[in-house]
Length: 477
Image (cartoon, rainbow, N blue to C red; front, side, top):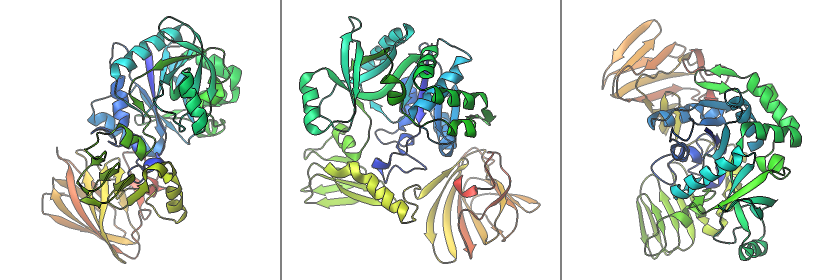
């Protein structure tokens, strides 16, 4: 059996402002109308070939991923939560330790959640070939046949052939090269891009890790043994996992083992690492522009333009990336978009929130978005999923007015519980315990008007919460 392991730990800063740390690119419909994580899970959804996927993410994204999987009709073997990021080697070790209990010779297929693949037939053939090699004890990686002298990827040099189907021993892994070196790799023909996709037997990867990175596998295994269930999640034990060195599978194992194999494959792969990558794979108009959303162009060529909120109109532009969201507009030279993360760092250093939060902020019960704000007031739109509820809470510094726009609300204020229909309203005084629930079958829309001296999200005291959120740090949830 092949056990897919979907790694969903990145923040996608080079796809800012659409991708942000609280809601990063792998959870967004960047390439199609489905989140990239869902596309990845659907890629391995054939129950005759694959077990249900093991998803590994950070704590902050757990409810978003759960909601996405539910909406797509997909279920996971487990959803493992990392207490902090430790790169791909500890994640792979934790996955192997988790699967070992039920299938020590099962085959892990390690998949980043944010890759785009267009040729599924080629992907399926490569996975089938990789499974055969992994069953024989090889640590397999997929090499992407290079189409250009790309400097943004690492490379894998092929060694001697392993079979007649096009698999090779790995001669060496090569760091991201400069342009001249990349051109020589392309001319040579024996090099492939390193896609970061791996296959290996559970027992083999654990044995190789014990030999080449014993501290990583020891701490990750301990974190699995001491993990605890939290609702539908498996929380890795924080102390053990944090003690693991942070390293990638490539550096920790693949560069040192004598069992590495590479399967070159042309499967229409992209890691969607920047806005220029989306221009590369996007459908272009007659002027080589990739247009997403409500856009009008005049004398504009070779641009990527994405409008998420209203019309974007351009005149006399070339080689630009323009991305418009609810609260940020990015305009960048298309050849400089690898440096977007520098802007993200500046936004964070300025103490602003646009690097981590969208205007629409997701919660396990739904989402809220700010419509208007002033010195002593704030207006928000709240959407509550059917059957969901906010925590029982109070605020020390603000009062709230709720108006039901659509659906039905069950409102608790103090000891009183009331059902409110559309166009009905209620008032929650400062310091009063309250809860909002959606008992109906359709989404509940609420307009919330806050008034008071302080309107921050951290002015919440929780008394009861079905999602197990920490009352000590409510703003992080």
